[in-house]
Image 1 (cartoon, one colour):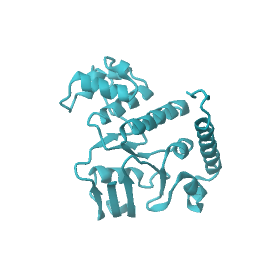
Image 2: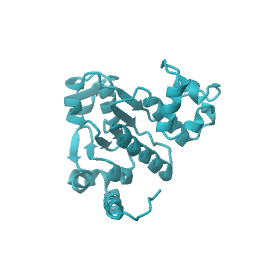
Image 3: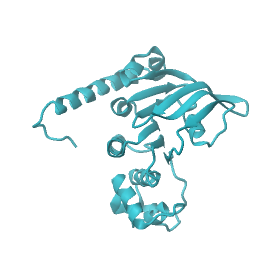
Image 4: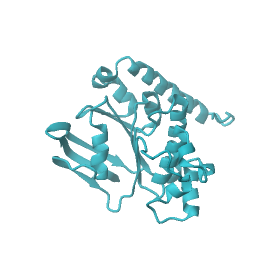
Length: 247
């Protein structure tokens, strides 16, 4: 079932075209990752989906009653503001502490509920933003470079949590990411964007596309190697009943 269907989307800002004639869809329980250079229109695409920008042309259609959870790149919060994680979670939602704690558990950080927002590390803050996005039991999670500023282990751990959520809740995931090595191992489908869709498909197909290689250069080979290693690794573990789980 299509949760989001975009047809012929064109977005402009003051006469400058950010996106031109973009068409794509996102299906239930699917992980779709958008990659592309800076200024390629990635954030504009997400904004069009959540209704934050009005397209010049084309349409964005969503499933009736679609619930969206949005995780931004960053949160501009006054560091001197005395507010706990629990209070932040309830700022614009009529929810109780139990629901708040459940969302934090799904994001993997229930122990942070009483902590001050100003005391959180970058990784902890992103988990709290993820928990807040989960409050309404969304059908789709939209992540706008949610791991920007995190180191590689922190990013990998965050994406593992996203994959776990997808498995547990069945929600779809649409995300922008620069972490090519992670994208190749966690996505069902990759869309390469540069003002228009250059190429799209399964990760290994996209990595092999000339348009993708032209944009990402030598990083492509490393991403593909890691993608293959990850899938071989998963296959080895799934075929052995006695293999210990890798953390």
